[in-house]
Length: 300
DNA sequence: CGGTTTTGACCGGCGC
DNA sequence: GCGCCGGTCAAAACCG
Image (tube, rainbow, N blue to C red; front, side):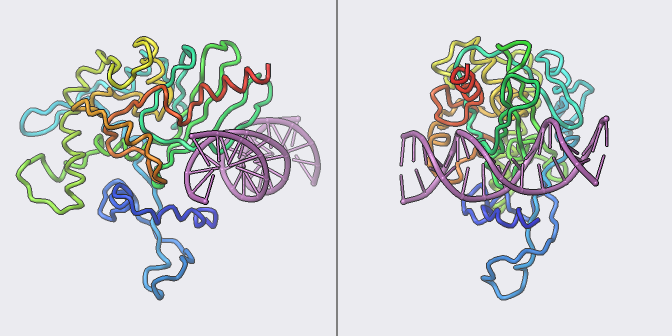
């Protein structure tokens, strides 16, 4: 608890953060705890704080189930996208952790705009390579990942994801359950932001249906040969955005990621949903592959 | 100079 | 109870 208190990144005033801090958000569980906030306000709610519980994995999995919109309501079909991806991509789930094994095709990296902060690296016993630990920089996102090189196949990276990108999850959660899509709704500024998200959601069914046809977006992976980008794109960043078709996140092929990912703002994690997932190989950001590669090469 | 990474210390869980 | 091990912290180093 005290450690979290140090985490006063909540003070960020970024628009997204405000949204994320929206008490009305159905995506978060509000809890109260004791926090000796730097007593700005005399008493009052200064002892309250928000604790991000985030969406539950099952919620997201449900949300990721294939849905079709028949004009009146969503019909959830049996097929689960995660399951499919698991089969197709070797994604495995163990106790709420997803492990993805991916072939490393050189140094080509993709940065989907999600920002990871490396917070540790350990040499794991009996493994020749170190394991790197990353956290999502979104202050209310609990997503973490571990990246290490396979002991058996040096070509293969093993990425374990724990937790989800809540901001990514936005469009996939049933925000509209109590608010059927109706374009002419008048909404508050706060909700407006959410509507943008809802728009993304409205595209989910279609894109989900096409998920097997996922192809890398050439515009977003420049510098990477396509076959390479797919792998890299799939593997390097947060789980869900790996799992989900980029199209969802890039409905109008807007290429404004570079502005997002290269922004030097202190809160430049991606938006919800990310406008465009991959900002390319040249990204100066976290690159677990390179990370490990460089480590390896420097050591061996 | 601010933000990010590195890296050794620290801590808690677990098995012996 | 103790030691090992993996995960996290946090100060220092590094970098643009």
